[in-house]
Length: 239
View 1 (cartoon, rainbow, N blue to C red):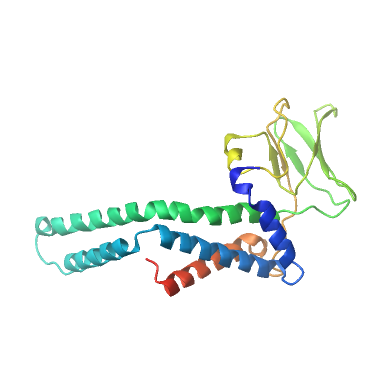
View 2: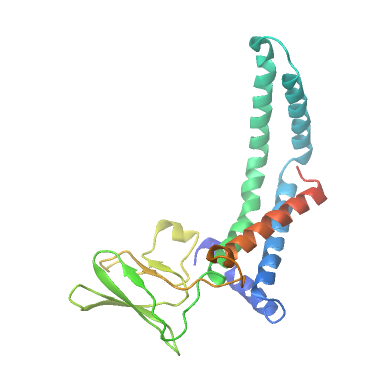
């Protein structure tokens, strides 16, 4: 587990409590709303709202002056330079709060990508397993127990038998960024002659209609998250 995966067990438990009463799409809306509200509140608390409002008013005043100016460029340049300075100052003011506010959403997104992403196929359904370096992969499903990905060399000799502990499409050797985001299926042994295994697991269908890109969790979650964030920002008058 990476640092961003630490709350995953709690999130999974809550999602399990909600599953008897809410379908997957409705649960995604709940997570999108909670993530948006929490992030916007963190941003509001950590950002200097009064100073941001003052800078915004000064910027609008300069913008109106520049838009209504009718003269030589060198005469309007001080106002344009002031506008750029105000815009840069606003970015610097909101940057720390924006980074802090993004962390809850990042945690939720990392968890959802596993919880609502790929799924195990039905028993006896073929799954393509790709291994770089000229190796051959084979999916071994299991009615009871853990499915596996077997890797053979060109002569058909077994090189590795990898237990797929979670339905994730890629299993790889441990990388530096796994300190932050772990692979729930675990990692390949460093001694293996290949770096990763790609498993074409079926995507979990959240919506029962539309093209394949619409049926996954991404569109539902991100569209709802943006809508909730904008609505909450307007209701709380966050700048």
